[in-house]
Length: 428
Length: 172
Image (cartoon, rainbow over all chains, first blue to last red; front, side):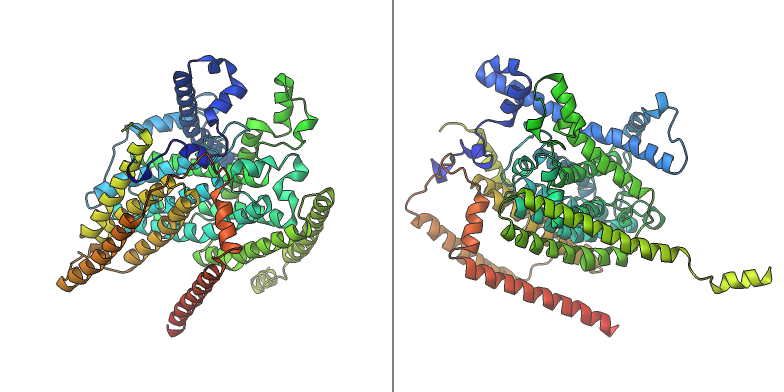
């Protein structure tokens, strides 16, 4: 044995359970398959699950792109794409076919190798994130002990792909967009990480499945567990929007300034890869937010109060936002909020963007960490009392905040007539 | 020797580490060197996984690839003219660099040869996550003082960086 290379148990070291996720999935959902002969059966199961995963995840952006166009259309009082298919539902498919047939253009002065490589890096990193997101008790590709930390690490590599794309394009718009994007992602990673840390301090585990397990029933959802996690959820979500470069934080691809940002020079399928990765990212951060703060696959009602077996159990679980479809509903709701914000709010300036991150979000996040630490000392175990106190504090805080905000807003609604208006009224 | 697919992956990572490191040292284009360094750091993270250090592997990626390498590229791209810079080697650099790396190589070689036996960590035996052990060692046991000193060092560096960048604004 040279240099002690013994890896048989390596997989079991990183994931706590001795069975693979595929075996567990099959036992829960298709027990027939377990009767296959051992190595063959396992291979078939693994391959089937991989195919499902690899096939389903890229389909999400397909739906989300259409959803975005429809949402934007309805917000702007239009109807959106209507021609392809009933109500335009095949529009994205048609666009995809169009993108495949477009010329694959590589700038002559650009760097060919890095230009070609960067979409793959971004694409691979965006999809590697999905490996650690739990969609149900048994639907999880890898139950890593360091789940959430792995997600942060992998998604931090996306920046490299963005810089690579911007530099290899040899275009000032691309380079400027890439620099802005990198600065933004690196900055907003800090509040994002600190908000995740508040959750990790409360749960005392980095394992995504452990994070979900404790959140049975809406009172146990981490967002309501302490007032600090309630604040952390909003900081996390806003930072996540900045992290995936969407309006109001879409400076890296501000079309009025930079054409299209770091992917200006890309065309055809390579452009489509960026596009798919962007929507996959959006879905991933929403799923992470739903998992960390909104109970993951646990519903509003604690699981033991619902019937488990049969179709009735499944329907009830879904209605109470539990299970696979429950996660999907929560995630898509958050994605919808992202789209809603995009078509409602104007873009921030660079200095406003950085001020928001460094002067507001990071101090708030540090305060949250301190608060959760003190909360953990006062209430070492979650009890009825701690949850009631927490929800009371949240409600009081909301009333206070909206009272103050509402008063200042209603004051702002009737500004004193400006000099110009006075002049107009004087002349008429 | 029994064939093991995980060994194949290990040697792949080892090859990637050494190969990309050679590219980092020899290539003339500074941006290419930075991207080759990304591959090196990534494969070192892969080697950490084989040493059952999952937390360390993720930290390697998040700190070196997501942080330090991005800053290196920022520095390169913000400095005008450095993109087309051809890296040249001066004779003195080669000499001193060679001596330092030879000393380092000898040191590592002596550690390898002086290790009496290579132990296989029994992976099945310890089921508790590595983060627990790291946390206990850092916060409760012998490494508390180095940990705090490192944190103070980082704080000083941060204040220094803020001071330097602020001074430039005042001068304008």
